[in-house]
Image (tube, rainbow, N blue to C red):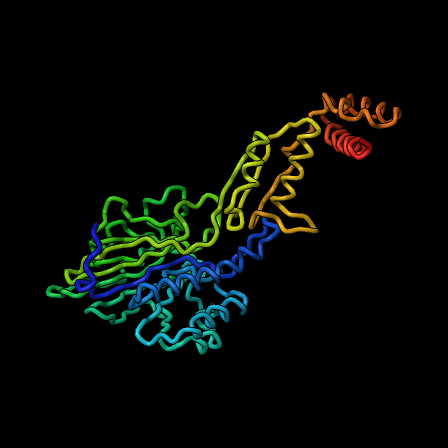
Length: 383
């Protein structure tokens, strides 16, 4: 689909969703980096809106990870808005199923609402309508609970005969084409067509995609989360910039805003570990690293050093931005270790030979291998 010429564009919007401010990543030692990254991603979303000079920013739900997030998250979000002197650009915040419009939710928090500039609008009623530039109207329906069986688009009125304006819907929920997901607030795949919408902005799943994939007009879009949250997310880290022409045709541009790239690796050869350590992009990688390495003593020592370079130690920063490292797959090949321990006194060489025998017993292997590694290090220092 070719982008319309600048003189043909009557409305520009940015569509984002699933910020999950306040989410914890407890499986990582450096989980605070990933938690803080949620708010950093919102900053880049707003910068993208400024770069494209959009008329409106649609935020389609799950903006907080829970209905009542810690104060620092809604204060941080309000601060990002207040730092901007936007006078001709509106922002619309939609409650999702993680942060529904409950009586005691963040959306009812007067301290939060009082911090928001007047161009930031919370979708705080069961049906919300707002006039946009270019003879356009936004129709938004919030989640009123954390789960539900009703299609939220049913609350959006049908297009009236003779209505030639741009109609945009915004809801949060699951589409029936999502595999292996628990369905909450099910959105019909043809909802945009049935309701007479020119664009349907939705949030919930974390990857950028059209729904259904083969239909581009009128578009129904999941923009995905602007910063990935898990290794199995596909096409996360984007927003949708949408340009509408005079014929109400929506042109969708996929824009990356994420800082982090999530990656899983299994290392089976020492050379792979060397190449990984030398990568230039490791500072922006969230890495889950698993090992399947059985190495003779000198190469074992090198592997330990490479892993320390990647993960860091108490004395130095690691090369990887955030790492989940399981070292249990790195084991010592004890069959030749005595050949590297010839500088040890005879009594310790005898201990090496004995430990080699012990290492053949599955229940004692790990302890024996650790002892052999220490003896190898002593021999290396002695030489």
